[in-house]
Amino acid sequence: MVVSPVPSKASVLLVDDDLDIREIVGEVLTDAGYRVVAASNGAEAFDILGSCHPDLILLDLNMPVMSGQQFRKKQLGDAELASIPTVVMTAVARPWELADELASADVLAKPLDLASLLEVVGRYCHARRGRARP
Image 1 (spheres, rainbow, N blue to C red):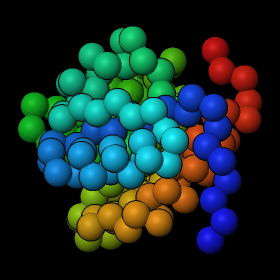
Image 2 (tube, rainbow, N blue to C red; image 1 turned 135 degrees about the vertical axis):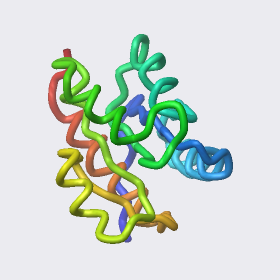
Image 3 (tube, helix red, strand yellow; image 1 turned 180 degrees about the vertical axis):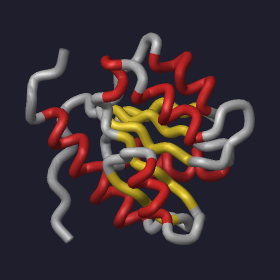
Image 4 (cartoon, rainbow, N blue to C red; image 1 turned 90 degrees about the vertical axis):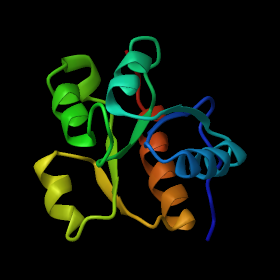
């Protein structure tokens, strides 16, 4: 597989309550050239979005404090944040149904396949970097 160079300063907000997943995915994306900011739940992610507008959000669904579903509904209610593509990461059966319900850009099934992760992240970060951002 040929991987395109990472767009300059492409950033990803990684939202997952599992520390191991945050560390592994964060390391893989950082090694691939992305800037990664991580949050352990939806509420923490919203705090981060106050000062950071990533090119992509990777969102777990089953989290304490504020679930991925709650985060996504709140995100969609904010005109500025709604435009950030969000990829759902989940281990639920039939993840596409839930992803469609949440109007997510894509879905990654857990356990994560790292090649698929890099392909999906690259696709959305290249698309965002290819057009002007506010």
